[in-house]
Amino acid sequence: MNPTSPEPAPDPAPSPTADRFPLYTPEFAADPHGAYERMRRVYGPLVPVELSPGVPATLVIGYAQARRVLNDPLRFPADPRVWEQQVPASCPVRPMMEWRPNALRSGGTEHARYRAPNTAALDAVDQHELRSLVEKIAAEAITELRAAGGADLLDRYARPIAFRVLSTLLGCPDEIGARIADGMARIFEATDAERGNLILGQAVQDLVTLRRHRPADDVTSRMLAHPAGLTDEEMAHQLVTLYGAGIEPLTQLIGNTCLKILTDEDFSGALHAGQSTVRDALDTVLYTDPPMANYCISYPPFPVDLDGVLLPPHQPVLISMAACNNDPELTRGLPPDAISGNRAHLAWSIGPHSCPARSHAYLIAETAISHLLDALPEIDLAVPAGELRWRPGPFHRALESLPVALPAAH
Image (cartoon, rainbow, N blue to C red; front, side, top):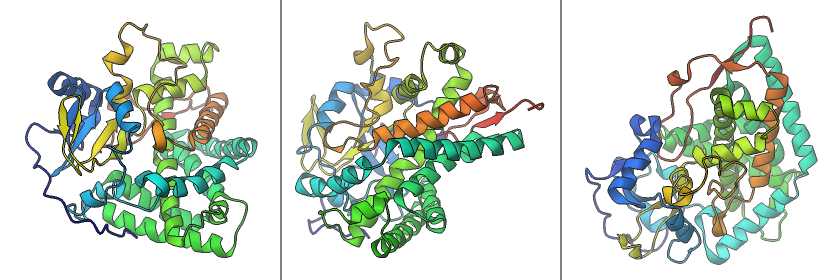
């Protein structure tokens, strides 16, 4: 499902050195903001990193530099086909970075052709029906939480909501959806990514075949009917993008926001007193701990001088949304609560590759969290916050689990 480019392979990329910051370690996952501070002291806004052993890249941690990169698709295109010729299929981060015929990995007229059916199909989603769907699924999950007296809020609440809502929107039956979820989990974990890529690829092909022969009122069918005339292979890759953006990042956005509410007394107090809203809580988390912390990848086709740093050709350049949002140059002179209600963060990206489903993601996450807090106002962490663990990986900011408890009397 991943044709290679006819372009010749470039000279090998520079070998990673001891000076590169590894983004895949448990130590980085445990304290990324401390790592960003150290990076800033040593390198400034452009940092040499390793995404996986032997996979060098540049991480942009300056807000101003990130905006320039994201708004300059000519010097920073999203097409990785030359880069991936020197990266084995077994590389754990490759499935999250490799070329696919979709808007995320294309530019120019190809990007426009792929993005148009995505945005048209998503824009046709009825927001009132979507809210009702989330409320229905959330209510069912809350009934299970009550019966159990608590559980892992990610596995028993956030992930089922994200998965079931997205599958309903895409017209995906449960059997195919289960395989898609399995493949996506393997890819995001970067432990069995090659196998996950195969599972995911076959499952989305099966969904395309189903909706090609049995169209319905869903996102997949609308995309198939769009005048862009996407092939089955192209359609499969659009679905990979939608699932990739719609399950794990949305699960972690719900989880990270619930964690903030459960552990920050001032924050939760303002929320319960009506002085702030769940939407404010979401934006605070999107500033401080966005679920996709380091992504928005580009691959300069030639050496690029950015603020005096020469970026090598065909080597990944990643935007650290987490670090850029907290760039001291951005917040200098502002009061501590300046980010409250502020949506100038980069969590949805900007420029030609900005997220086309941000309104849907906001609605799903806001409805899920509001429903949880209204139904279970007494919910609390089942373990001390210091015992929670973050999943290693260069791209995400993701908890391993979020165990919660309810009073026994309930």
